[in-house]
Structures are given as C-alpha cells and as structure tokens.
Image 1 (cartoon, rainbow, N blue to C red):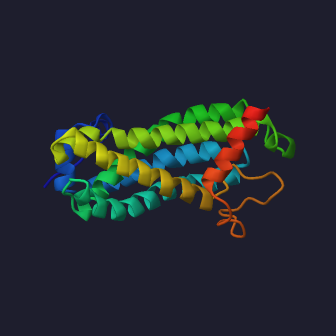
Image 2 (cartoon, helix red, strand yellow; image 1 turned 120 degrees about the vertical axis):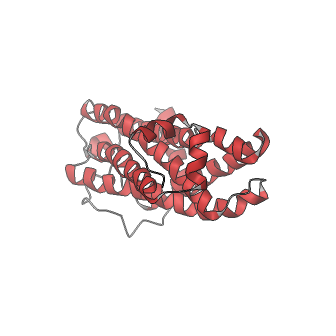
Image 3 (cartoon, rainbow, N blue to C red; image 1 turned 90 degrees about the vertical axis):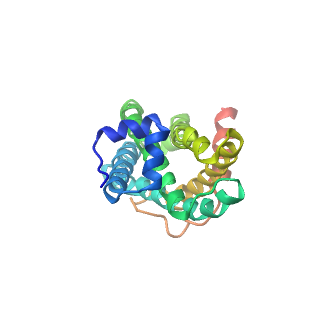
Length: 235
C-alpha cells in the first residue's frame, strides 16, 4: 500500500509529474488528508493575516473562510472539469480530476501560507483600521495587494501541474486547453465565492460577522474590483 510523508509536500510543490501522476491514478486517503491539511493551514494562515487588520475575531473567521473557499472551488470545478476534460482531449475520470484539482489547491494554499508573514507585515505597518482608513488609499491598496497575491497563488497552483497535464494529455496543446479551463473555472467560481462569503477585512462601523447575509448576493467581485482600481488611479 502506498504511503505518504512530509517530503511529498516538496514533490507536489515541484510538480514532479511522474510521482504526481501515480497519486492521481492511485489516490490514497492519507495523502488526500495531507493535501486537505495543507489547504486548511496555508490558506488559514493567510486568511488570519488578512482579517487581523479589522480585529482578532475577524482574523479567526477569515482563517475559516479562506480554506472553505478553496475547497468549494475545488469541488465545483472538479465536477465541471470532469465533464470538460474529455471534450478538451484529456481522458480523466471525475475522481482523477478531483484529486488533481485538490493537489492544485494544496499548492495554491502553500503559496498563500508563504505569503502570510508578508501580509501580516503589511497589516502591522498600515495605520489602524478606522472609518477614515477605510475610505483612504491604504484600504484600496491593501485590497489590491490581496487580490494580486491570491491571483498569483491560484495561477501558480494550476500552472505547477502543467507538466502533469502534458504527460496525461500527450501534448502541450491538450494540456494548454485543460489548464486554461482550470484557470477560468477557478477565477470565475473562486472570485465569486470570495464575494459571497465576504467580509474578509470588514468594516469598522459594522459588527464582525461570518457573512453579511443581507448583502451576500448583491453585486459581484468584478464590479467591486473595477471600482477599486478606478478609484485608486483617480487619486
């Protein structure tokens, strides 16, 4: 029976296609638990650093929400890509697709965990969160910094398995199509889940909550990002 150890984290982060392919072909429960643990710890640490600017309670809630977003995105895209992969030339089962996306999520979470100290450093050196700060440049720059880091981690988490996709698909063209589908699905579903499960930083004049139930489905992530960018460029 296959076993795992902590050295396999390095194998995953390096995207060693031969070893990773065997993990997809013959998934082991204990290795799946390891990947889930990476997601919980890595994304949780980054979420805690993000929410700490508002309050310690907000840090705790975001530390729970961030791994949840990655897991929900993995589940949703696993179902979608399980149907798309054969159409794009890659013969993967739903189980293999789900395991591959789980590994991609683990890489993403590991990168986020590595950025957590930097995010905490930014929070430490940013003026305290207040109504004034919320409408200032620091707040918009903080949001954009988080978007850039999360987008980078997500892209890197998918791209790290590109060699695996080439091996599975037989050529770079098939691998490129599948990778694009993964990235598009992660961007669309993941970003909207972030929007629904907001707040992450929160508002100083509102209570700390897990989710703003009365506004959760109002607007969209892309609309908010557009206004944040235009407001930052206009000042």
